Length: 304
Image (cartoon, rainbow, N blue to C red; front, side):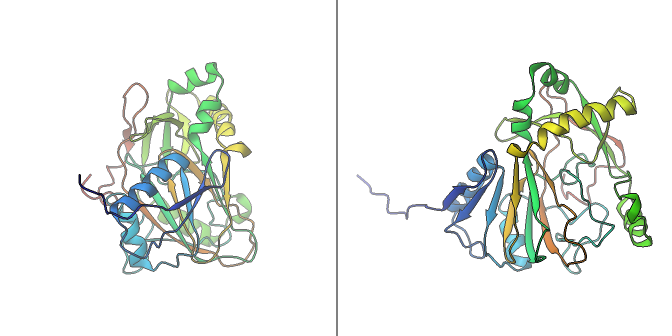
């Protein structure tokens, strides 16, 4: 009888939220990860939706290599320029007035939003600047049956062209950033309830880019979206990540939302984001997302 002499796989997965989030220890992401170790990381991501790796201090190439284990990478963003010389890395550095400061899922205005997002902390403020991540599957499970039936039947139009900068920050800098952000206009109709392509879980697929519901008026859309969004951001569904320099956070963009509160004044905060290409979302009836304006963003999701 043959004996399996392979080393045991033993990463440390410590749950840090009641419904979302785990901190992963016992792994060096700067190294070439064994397939079995990475399989445990992927399984932990599916189970916990968001993973925190403390003190990794990765460089650009190491973050890119780790993110690529999850699948083909997107370029940095459909409209916003990448870090110089690094077409797959987006600098997340919000000056006052151009910070997103709302709940969203990354790049849902295109037909194939990212599957996985990775964030690496390079500069963090002395206070504030946390990232909040919400479990959209738990939110869907929380819905009363009548609301769940309504959500199951809806499609939402997501767009990058909307006024997300607060009026008090109507600066020239904010206007220039918005001009770049909407230099290509996208509108995509996604199912409000998305079926996760790996786990089969159902989650509310909405967030800040979802601006209206197909077949409903603006007023009706806003009221229903606010009602559904309130379930996503219930405190019990939210993980708050307090950053340290060198930390890396990975979250499943297919079934979470996230939010970076604008609570750190003029202090610097700089993260680097690398995202993994995703598929076209599907609802519970199998209908897939449809482009209403723009293109397939092939420059953003190469080969798709």
